[in-house]
Length: 115
Length: 110
Image 1 (cartoon, rainbow over the protein chains, first blue to last red):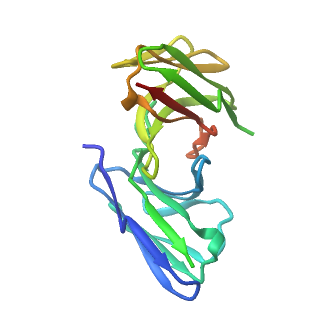
Image 2 (cartoon, chains in turn green, blue):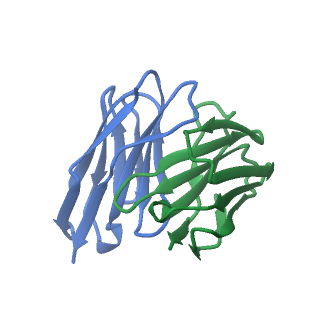
């Protein structure tokens, strides 16, 4: 089973709203990722958590706040977003310790629209 | 800085017409090269990972190959359901980050 589950599938929010995206995996992976993908572009890395600790923050604005409550869950808290933040937000996970592996498995994404 | 260039940007084939997609890369110590398939509005689906020059992997109508500078994704006798965007990504040793190419949009016409 290589399933990464993201909820919600779709989200519409105003610029003053606070919302959260959720990601869950039960593969025993200890690295989890948030990506942002605009139409016809490749995924852009936002954050990496390794063993529940934030290891990479790709200079993402503070209106995006990641959280990793445990090894299976990853949240992305959203506050005061701008219309240009509308995109497909993807979660991925991998097992970083296995030599010559580290395959990232992606969820189906959350389609976010900011009005 | 790691870089990935994919070509062509878009490719239209007749059903059954075989072809190849190219992924050229520069990376400071290749840990792995990854191929993903992405359908519109969905997350990337893992296809293959290649680790060293000369390696090949196959799955149904797809075959991925790797040299020290590029990878090819060969599609043999494609079907309409193979239509998707194919993404190539590289990872360097000591780096958790994947560097993606911009993808090839493949359309198979019945």
